[in-house]
Image (cartoon, rainbow, N blue to C red):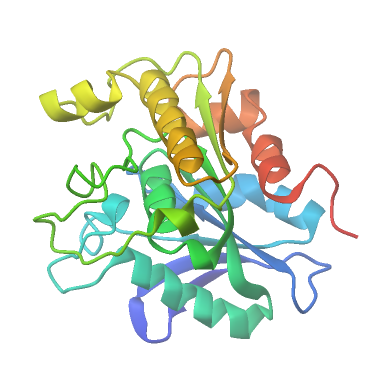
Length: 259
């Protein structure tokens, strides 16, 4: 179902309610990349939502209204992508009766950038997170300005980060072993030196940094990475040839469908 947010009719999202949904069904949020393939996300994940009895939401962050949604920046009107998602979730909690107290969050590419930054900024709203091949990351480092780290920034967005809280959220990163090009990849001296030159290197370095941070805070490391052979930087290929749907739902909900 294509919906428009009541409080902001220009803000659209896609909603799928499984046939055996009930009050308190979990809410799965999938966030598109910069190609804005929101319908592809909803369509390819809908069978998994049906099988597991999970309500699915796919927000649509447009180029004109949400140009910096990947790092939750404000647009020209002052809208922030994380607060937009919160408004969508609040509306869905009424219309679908899903349990929206804690989200099961996924994003691919630019959407994975949004998903992990949302998790770092709002860990109390997230049960588990799965990331599909983010281009670059926010590291748990207060010496670096946001969005490269957790420190103060010139970006027009005010966020508070508490590692003791966000390090308690289980996060799984999925990346294809052939995802080694700079296609739609932020490349500059700062990010290349900090994170590496491709998505494989960047996923490895970020996961290692998050696991070190957990140990420094005397917490069990809950961030892991799965590298999938034969997969390039393509959401559709990852879903159809890399079994991404099953991998994501296994990471978020476990292997067995809900009864």
